[in-house]
Length: 222
Image (cartoon, rainbow, N blue to C red; front, side, top):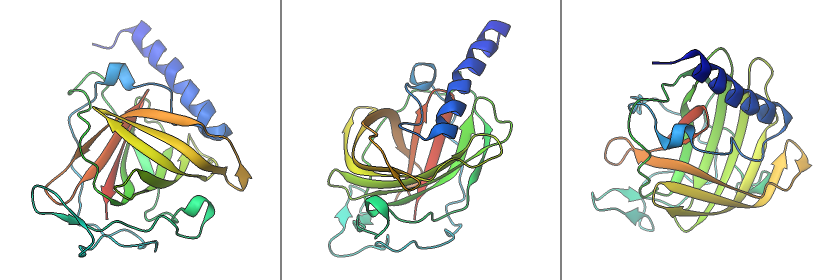
């Protein structure tokens, strides 16, 4: 049961997220939500097409694609799409925040993240009054990625942040080290981030899901 002191503490945590979102990100937040616990996995309509294909390589199977144990073939996308840091434009509209129950479910399980282009389809946070999340994430399966993101904390959209660099997976955590970072048109030093994550969804239609204090984001592979 949520106590008054716990609700006040959660509100304080999310206040930090609002400051980050409005001032230009270095990371979505600093640490996993509630020790890495999270609610039951949501259902996403994976049949809905993205708004645009965004260029920079598709997700159709090809002879150079990776094949997993289930026989799914994943074609590695291009990581040089021509925008800052080689990023793609957004593939979907922003997703409004819904509520997240930080006490429910199990911890993030990690997993194998197939190469491809992923767009945010679910955004959850502890205080779901307004705001939205928009993100397109591209991963090549060989340790490199690009990412385009914009956070609307309440009403006004924050900067469009573009990142590229390397990633490593260890257990239920994914670590990003940025070698290119822009907030709108301003070059910045973004450092690195480590976040809890897992790969969920039906066979051959993976979703990349990650969490941080007060939020959880789910992205669908195109």
